[in-house]
Length: 144
Image (cartoon, rainbow, N blue to C red; front, side, top):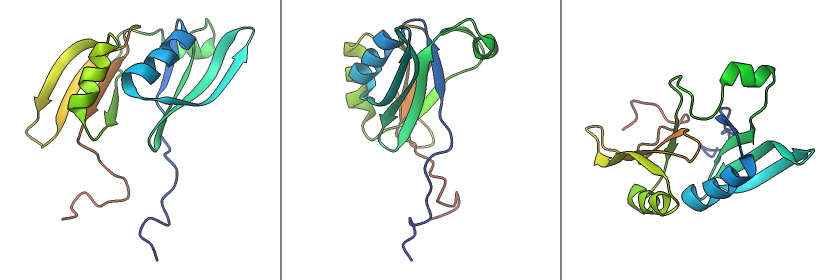
């Protein structure tokens, strides 16, 4: 049996509310290489969008004064939120993100655990961490 035959789709989907979801979706495509998988609008507002990057996905929507908005807050608010994305080439992505106007919070660095990372903020203040460290749920953490 193929070792990957039992792999399932990801279960974790970071979700972002933006003040201007359409502008931010275009920026996320340009800066990080996301592609729109699905997009749903109501009364001219993007109420839900799914953006794919490789085998991973995030969900994006317009910020709204509703129950969910009360729970998660608005873009850029404090709360220990960030998203880590495993990539193959952080140097290339760092240049691309800077070119798109990402605010660098931590420049490229090599970590003691073997990753090459950087951290930036999107134009609405959400924190994005990119690195070559890629934990895979289907592999044992002690696998050689």
